[in-house]
Length: 314
Image 1 (cartoon, helix red, strand yellow):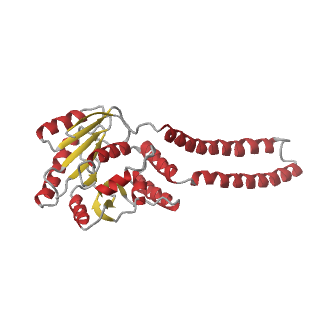
Image 2 (tube, rainbow, N blue to C red):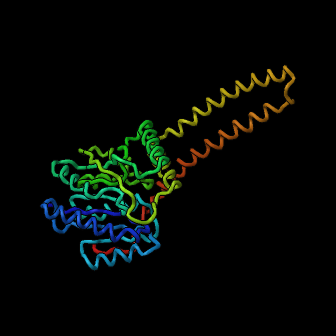
Image 3 (spheres, rainbow, N blue to C red):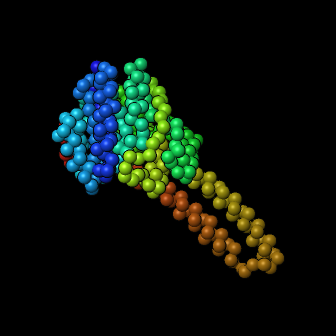
């Protein structure tokens, strides 16, 4: 039997973490009893720079059960880096790794079905939500638009899949070979090419606490996903330039006609066209190019993705 490690990124999850650990242990114990995984299977929680009692809870749980391990970041490095840190540590000993968020809106009982698919030779099993009734109308529709937009631009994502998945050791090792700092794990994993499958589950409300992905972070995450995998925004600048030129020609005819009819002040049309159309497009274009240049700068520095302050149980 092979070892399973469940990796849980956590940021200020003191309200929900004790219940999460208890429930994940129960799921893992059932898998061990059914002889699917080794008795040394564990849970690895990555504290992503929490400012509450998250790390204290992890330490207490480790004292009560040696199968609870923890990694503490020196500061907040982000959810994607927490996942990478957890997988990077877990893959040293585990043959199977499951990642799941601490709020347990993703149903952990689906791990048993994931394990069955792994036993049949599947390297990657995606947890896919078949019901988003707990999400607001705005979140459901913006998420749908996000998936459709990225798929249209050539980024192959699994729709309604977040970061709840099972991966084999070789799949994780291959993922870790991708060294970019601007991580978008959901986009990278489908590129690995290993045999994959899906498990469907119903998304549930948070057990406690507040969402760590407000609208601002969701927009930033979507933008990172787009700019990390596609140069479509840069190509859009060319289209905007053509559009601006077309509008300029139309405005030229409009200016000539209004001038001929005596309905305009001399010089006003050309001035407004220059300021509002060309000036706005230039600033917009520079912003998009600056985003890509900024990402290139970050990558070229090759700074560490995260800094681990301390670990327990690993």
